[in-house]
Image (tube, rainbow, N blue to C red; front, side):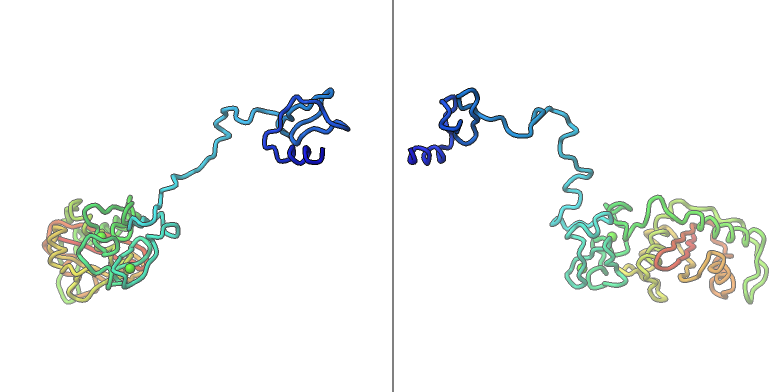
Length: 271
Ligand SMILES: [Ca+2]
Ligand SMILES: [Ca+2]
């Protein structure tokens, strides 16, 4: 009898519908009902296990592969979540969207190869994929650009006397949409990358001013960084014996770019 009970305990599938033992004892998982051992229903179940209701399905609110590691891509939205966004200056990887920028890590980012962080918004890069080089879209500082343009146009059409010069009146500039992208790329390098370059106006990634002007379709420029307001920047230009004559010069076409980021930067390009 003892041997039989022991064997019953270890029987993985005790037979049901056998007579109950003494004191209505049944094998584990069975209950004595009217003298016969019956299989028990699982405890605590009062509804079907699966009723097909989609609300019971596991839910996620973003694709699990939105920021996959190991693809050598770090979008701005993935900073802090994507192993590809970890920055180390000197590892030959420029991760501009994670803040590794040309001005601060020239070892990795000062290159004309297509990398995000070299302060050049290149083919295949956009505000979404490479905020570091292309800046926001839509552009954030259109009102400031309009403000600066109005100051420039008013000086030209109303007439202005540059320091050491005589009164000059000019037609308003024809505003060029074609020159605007390169102008904004440049002002973004000054403000977001905090890179001004030297008097040769070279780009952080090694492009010369002449190359930048050719790419942007302009032949001259006036720029500044660090002034607190559009008015301050304009007043500084017009008080300069070298910059004012450019603003008031004979060029006919212009674009103006302004960006307020790490620094405030202002740029007039002309042709
Ligand atoms: Ca790096
Ligand atoms: Ca780039």
